[in-house]
Amino acid sequence: MTAPNTPHSWDELITSPANPTIKLARSLHRRRMRHRERAILVEGTRAIQSASEHGAGIRALLIDASRAGDIDPSLLSSLRESAGRVLLVEPTLFQQVTDTEHPQPLVAICAMPDNPLPIDSTFVVALDGVRDPGNLGTLLRSSAAAGADGVALLHGSVDPFNPKAIRASVGAVFAQPLQSFAAVSEVIDNCFLKRPIVVVADSDGELAYDAIDWTQPSLLIIGGEAEGVSEEVRTYADVVASIPMAPGVESLNAAVAGSIVAFEIARQRRASR
Image (cartoon, rainbow, N blue to C red; front, side, top):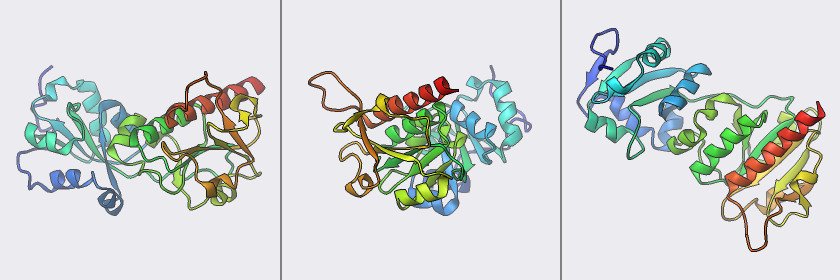
């Protein structure tokens, strides 16, 4: 493949760090700037495709000028239809924009998704104090794959629009409802027509996760990596559930534990239909 070389393939070649688009892209690594600009930085082909497929506004598509020929021309053509601008970027500048050591040759500046949870949810995953962006991104991806109605973010969780979280979600941040809430009571009142069973996942739970009837409206709460679910959030729990493990194993990674329980919920619901 050869690099795009016509005005129909790209709009501008950027070589200066003072370029406004480059300055904007670099600023989006900071949470404050993301929320001020209502824009996010999306790296990688699959995540950018997901953004495009789910109607996220692509304000600009940035291409590493030295690797433009590595991009599938049909992909570039389809993305151009939804992108405001397509820009070739000098390789050193492109590296400064990205968040990875060996980035793919595509980065997009997208409008921040605004997709609140539905009021008639029957399965919501809530994240309480999940601070690792990789774990949060994985939980977003697993929740979408397990058929959750959406993800509720409680106090202390990392920004889901952190570039690392977006990359770990492989675009799932665009594929499902995602909303922040001040308290569990707000999730219950705003996302369910009927009060759900509220289940906190924790290694000291009194009931095995697969012994719960997940076919009823359910709110699954996953805690952070170090402290787990906060004491305040625990006061809302109807059940604290655990994943039985072999002797000598203390706990599972938050993303792994949440994914296991989410797919048990999906399994039970498939079996009940």
